[in-house]
Image (tube, rainbow, N blue to C red; front, side, top):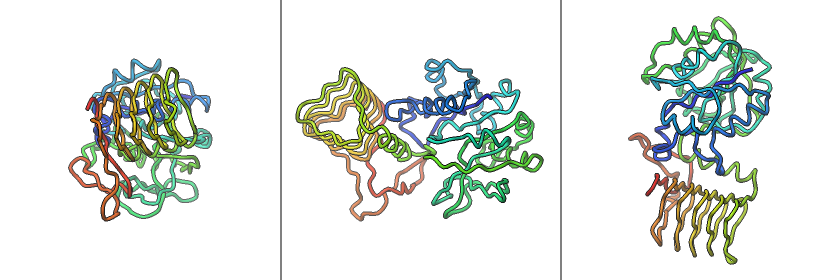
Length: 338
C-alpha cells in the first residue's frame, strides 16, 4: 500500500516557528515531525511514500529519499492531495503533515474507505465528525463546541477521491477543502469512521508544539547527545532530552528539550520548554513554557514571564486575533536568529 503526506502549507498559525522551517520539519525531541510520520507508516508495512510539498520545499526534499509532488497553489488540503494524482493508482493512506500520532492505524488500513477520528473536549477548533453505526454521517467544519469527535487527519481512500476533488468548489475560507470532497464521496461510497486510541495532536499553534514535545519527553525519559559537556553542579530534572555538542553549565533544566550545539549558562533555569539548535541561554536566564527557535542568543539576565497576574488562561495574538491558549502558564515563542 502507498501513503501520501500533505506537507505543503505555510503553517501561519505557528509563526514565528515556521518563518524559516516548514512545519513538517519542526523538531520533536530533536527529530523532525515528518520522521515520526514516516516511521509510523513503515511500522505498518507502508514503504512507498509520497510527500506533497510547497512552502520551503527544498528543506524537505534535501532530507528525504521519497517521492515528492509540488502543490503549486497551496490552497487547501484537496488541492494538495490532487497534486499527487499521478502517484495514486490504488488504495492509499493519507496523512496531514501537521498531525502527530503515536498509536496504531491498523484498523484504518483494514477498513477500506475510512477516516480516523479522535475524542476532544472542545471541537470548536476542528472539524466535528458525526457518525452512526461506524459510518460517517456529517462533517461540521469548526461550527460546534463542547465535547465530541474530531477529524484526525488520517484517511484510507481509493483513487476515486480525485474525481470528487475535481468537483470541489472553493470554500468560504478561499481554500479547496478535502472534507468537502469527502462529503461528496460519502454520498456515493459510504466512509467508515475509525476511532484512534493512541496519543494524537494537531500541531496548529505553538503551544500544541510544546505539548507534543512534552509527550515525547515523558516517553523518552532522558537522553544526552555525543560531545555534550554537563558541568558538575548542573541540575537536570527528568525527563529531558539534550542534543550533541552542548555545554550545560551550572544551571537547572526541568522537563525540556535542548537542541544540538546549545549553551545553557550558569544560574539559568529552563522549564517545560524547547530550545532549538545553535541557541544560547546564557547566565541568569529564566525560560519557562516557551520555544526558542534556532540560532538565538538571549541576553544575560533574560526573564520570560509565563503566568498572568489574574491567573487566567494566557491569550496569544494569532493572525491578528486573540486566541485562548487554554494554558495558565505560557511564555514566549522566539523566532530564528534573534
